[in-house]
Length: 337
Image (tube, rainbow, N blue to C red; front, top):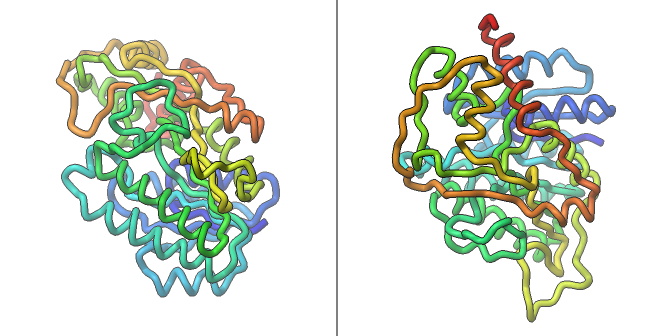
């Protein structure tokens, strides 16, 4: 298959590209290489991919409509994996316009290209953040997600609604994946596991919000990518058992699906930090702080749908995953053990 990955220089996008190339797919990746976090890391990810046969990179922003149209006209993509987005819950509080442009306008242009060029399957990144103010755990795709607590979350919910509309009106097969706290080698420097590692090795105290009374469904990158590939290979189809008298956000009479993709268990923040300390061989100093705006107390994915329909089974425990990240971090940044 020829697969387009938007956000191809990112954490998930670059890792996915390697796996697709490994099995013989052709991959075209686009990314705007913005400076939300260190561009050099994105360039390093791309440098590894550019050495591989079957990979092409085009520097482009999704909001560049004419360039996006030209790219789709030049190539006959079989599937599209949309990972291009302005990420980060907390960043969205101070920089809302970035989310409107990348996550709404850009996604709208991408949907239209998929329609015009009859793409067989659009898979797009949603987020566990859409569950917002929900407190019943684990989070299920059947749950209403109408109370976002950040603009980032709202933009991801909007993506789901926009994709469903294109599936309903134009028959574009669309599948949304609600990612739960992805971590691992080549990760994002704005995420806690990365920031904590950098600060601990520098001897700085780490910010622990809500005094550590938080939990997350941490999911290792290799498990995420395995699930994504399984989904890409099976385009969404209409749900013949969908009951419009009892609607669920998870499926539709249109070729549309939503799935949680996570580890299926949650880890307390302080246990997570303790495990990271053990992997680093460093004891952290904690700066205990109150809850942040836009944050939630807990996330936990019900992954039964993805398991039943695709055989998805995450295999990586938190200790193994964090050790793999720490080993990569020390090698990449040349930090001796």
